[in-house]
Image (tube, rainbow over all chains, first blue to last red; front, side, top):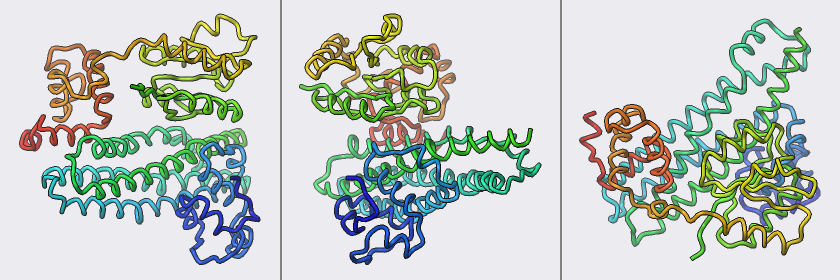
Amino acid sequence: MLIQKEIKLADVIHHDYNLIPVLNRFDIRLGFGDKTIEEICIEKNINIEFFLTILNAFHDRQFFPKKHLQSFPAKLLIQYLNKSHLYYLEEKVPEIEFSIEQLKNNTDLSPETFTLLKNFFEEYRNELTNHINNEEERVYPYVQKLEDAINSGKISDTLIQEMEEYSITDYEEDHDDVESKLYDLKNIIIKYLPSSENDNQYFNLLKELFMLESDLNEHSRIEDLILVPKVEAMEFTLKSMKS
Amino acid sequence: MVIRQTVVMIEGAYLIQAGIEQLLNELPGLVLLEVFEGSEKSLSEKIARLSPDILIIDTNSLKTDFVPLINEINKNPDCLTIGLFDSSTPENVKSHFKGCLNLSDGKFELLEQFGQILGKRPAKKPGLSNSSLSEREKTIVKQVVNGLTNQEIADKLFLSIHTVTTHRKNISNKLGIKTVSGLTVYALMNKIVDLNEIEHR
């Protein structure tokens, strides 16, 4: 289903509940009654086109209008990406930690194995946090500076220097290890944990890992296919502006 | 038993993408892992990481010359490359691929071609479907967990670095675990190493 602005948001959520986390990223809270997407966006001062595009991309993997998404200001994209970081670190990760903590009472799991799992996830969390911090402290501010320079038509010498020292192309490389760790953790749980009567605990943990993974995939798709090419184009424009 | 085979596709055009997905759904055991649209950076590494059994490529979707990419992929003899072509595609393009599908064909012909391509596929090496590690592989896991690099492992066990890399690839494929920390958890859980060994390194 293509989500359009005349549709009631409540109906959209009934249709695909995986979109619930996306609402938060636009500061929309449940309790919106029978309002349409358009009405909510006007009320909350949200860019309708951008909200619709993100909803549709999230809802349907094949719907990914690259050119269209690249046409939105980097500022909007960054805002959205920042909000999803918040969701990973403050909602998803603690939920998973809680699920792992529950395994402590599982008598089929030795205390040693429990500790191994716990430490492994902690290591993953640290890596994810570092990765996110790097984006928020270095990458996004840099992108914002580029956009500001383009909008004002003024480019400072420090920015040129920054562009020379640091190019966005370098940053794409670094997504991998974080993804692999999550993949490993899923396989360890699916294939190698001792069987337990209390499967539900494993299921809950797995379900949360799968949800985090698919959300992160969507997130890096926006970074790699939308933000990075957009920034490369901006770098190019600024460099030719200078010369 | 239906053998599970993983598929990755490079296709930028939605209509063709959707059509191929439809076709894959008709064939039991095929699992589509990822669709690339062709303009992604470091595409060959991304594909290598997924290490699909089958790679379907539409050369029209690639922004760059397809030959270096396909040569890189063909280095892995276990990956079956299938090109999407029409009647005007020259033979020297087709020859780079292990199989071809003709875009102008009907469903019946396509399924038949697909079946033939899959039939030509060499039987999987016996070791790979069996997920338990050989003694040699266990020895390698031990070294990896202890923090040795591939070169150090090669020196210590008198192997070539190439052999060590192959072992590591097989280990990752067998276990479905790619990172060193993941292997550590596995090795400890299965008593391939014990905790004291690691802590005292």
